[in-house]
Length: 435
Image 1 (cartoon, one colour):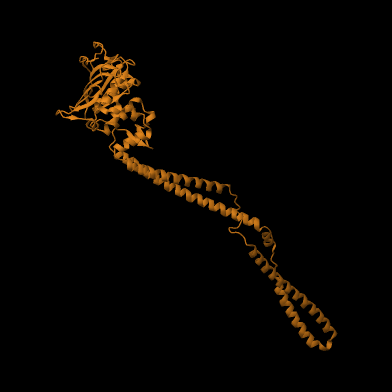
Image 2: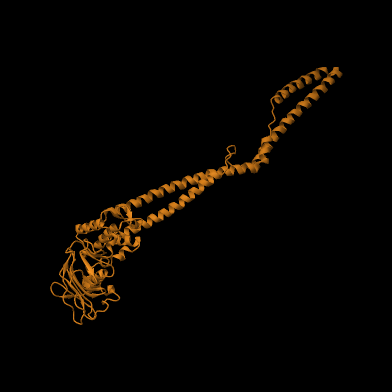
């Protein structure tokens, strides 16, 4: 990894003359009070390595007659300079050959010199950067699109199932109603059949009365016509036999009642209303059950896709243990970005920046006063463990600071005379940890 070995800055923003030799791994903290030039050091490094798009709007120190001067020595031997009236860039490689911004861009990660750009990005943008650098962004996007499609489909199915179940629950049910609607014509046909049978019964009863009358008449005739006794007796006996048979036929006859059919005919609309209500309730319950089965099937498919996403991220080469992407957001040790501590946010950011360009071994950090000393020490130890170099600022004059900046100089250094048209004498070099 390429790191910063030395840097010299003169007349940039609030910096008058500063030399720094940052520690190779861990934190180099530039301390001092507000408006002394701490942030100007970081801005100078960003301008020197990142190009003119990082040039401060007022690069030259106010009141200086000498143009800005930057001199940065990198661990790969490259020397980066900006000097002269136009602050032109000059990059010299170890063999003495000149290079340019394109050479720096090949290993200097933009987010390493502009970490707030990453930290201030939206949760989705942070997650997309991570997914892109670990090479699973497209596949995960396909799975998320499929998951969303199935989720929306399941949501719709669930709503329909709930509606069907609610409709079924609200429907009245009549257990005494027939299973199918009644036909009025069928009831009338049944009624007519019964009436026909009853008419036949009536005819048979009438036949009995006729035979009885004939029998009585014949008896009187027998008594009156003694001369025709034999014939009359024979006929009388025959009629008696017929009477016995007719009486036997009519003895067990029972007329069927049409009262129920007549009542059903009168109530056919009400009966059919109940039948239809029962059928609607049965269908709604069946539909609700079918939609619930579809809902469960979609749930199974969604869980399968989520497992694929989990497997995809578990097998990916993530830049930090405990780092993941859930629902399109960065998650570290189970916490989303807005719930992470400041130290964890910096740790995640630094790890992702390193993954973007592994050759870039340094990052610039501003305003580390948000960390307490214990957290600061913990973060520094993590940087050392990872072999990362961080140059940071902190509003402080405590022992945790590698150097202290006062009025554009390193504290304790004899201040140079007032600026002249010629470059000032070379300032004293301070190494990290001397304070």
